[in-house]
Length: 149
Image (cartoon, rainbow, N blue to C red):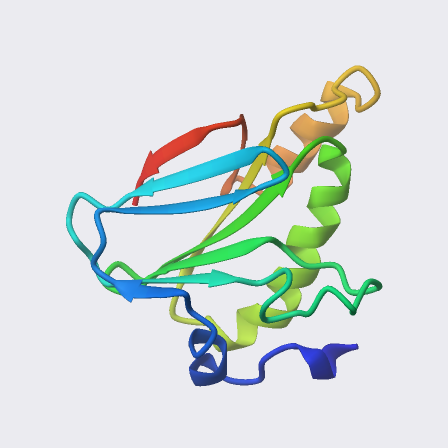
């Protein structure tokens, strides 16, 4: 399964949809939206992982939806957009991190889960809080999420 993941930084960024200094980058799917505000006009690569880097046909491969690389600040934002089932997003983030970490060694990694129908009644808040303690770079928010990168 690991052979479907890019083996080099150059291969990964070759999938970038936006390679610019845009003022905003929008990742959207499943009625969820992450808005990255680029006030500093940093150089950013915006990459769709699910469906472009990892094709939809690879159903058994867990992966995030988008990757946003702030090349100027060397920050990688792993973005998972969930309609519900936040717990599934944890595994998607971990699997993606495991595969991309070797080629993103220079980057500080930030994880984002954006949802609109979280089933928090089914998912014990205790479990979410434990996961947040284990991964302090994780932010979970309702859609739309807007942040300055």
